[in-house]
Length: 293
Image 1 (cartoon, helix red, strand yellow):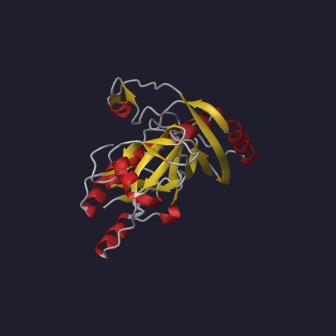
Image 2: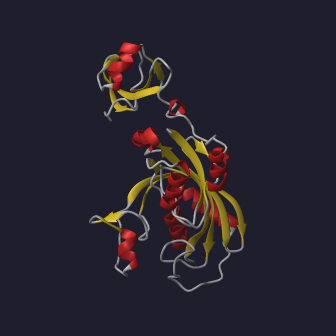
């Protein structure tokens, strides 16, 4: 069983728990996800299944889209509603015009400090483990890109929004920064990922739906051949396909830097990168008959 599944992760469980559930339901140990969702968040969690896990490297820089709610009035240790308050609660109802101006300031590229409670590692140790022990954690700021910030509603201390951001952006940190800028403190109260790259919530299935479809013999797998559609698909003759699946260079008349090489049956054989001219080298071999990767 090989391909991708767009899972609708429920709030309240970790991404790892969702992967474990999918492994159990599919009876497949080779399952990984493309980008962690915090336990409090719901929405699109893309799972790569079987040989599709070999393609994960090509999805690292996919942008993400979210909808959520920020609660102004106090900050928390985790920058979300699961943490302990770190400031006294104050009655603060932001003006819509002030929030729109604030959102405008954050558009584009800027340095963002990840939350202390995150999977980012400090000397090989996840920062959340250090934070849980009460140790001071200060993570290096990294460049992120906020491509869209849309204000959906302001209801008292609650601000609903939609955001489209680069990979690696922490929406919790955004909420925390907003609270600092407004002088009120703030935290992320609710979050839903609506898209991860080309994978949207319209294609997502819940764990219950996944179980039902597996019982019906029709798991909602996106086939290998439909993944990474931005790379041109190049059908190969049998001899060339055999070369590619053994990790050898092939000649392909294509101007792209990366291509999907298909065997004579139309199945994905490999992802190849240009070496020189029309010569391409397989960097990931998907064909199960080869141990190359």
